[in-house]
Image (tube, rainbow, N blue to C red; front, side, top):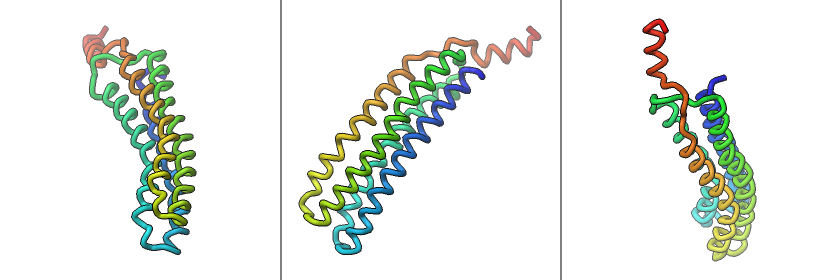
Length: 170
């Protein structure tokens, strides 16, 4: 398997894992919101804020996946060697795994926050403050992934060189 393929698999994993964490996290909050909104329909907007918070991990995975796609597809100056592609895939796993688990944890914290709002509406600020803590771990994964992907430069032959060599019969 060539390096570019490994890098693209990494991009897919970043998006898929972080997206899964967000999807499950958001669903936890929405389930709690349904219970509160049934009793207090006027609290919908406040619960909606907490429903959106765990969705950020999906955005982080998308940013890293897009960065890798941009480097692999749009810059045809060189290709990743298999080792470099594996390194990029590992870098993508940082945001993917961090996004998966922090999205799950953040969803549980936000679901508890929805229950707080159901009992005491003025607790929204405190619920959001508590939701920030799991977010930090996703941000750590995002930063490590972006820096690593940016620092790993492809050193293999360029795609254009390979096409030229095939055309020249070399």
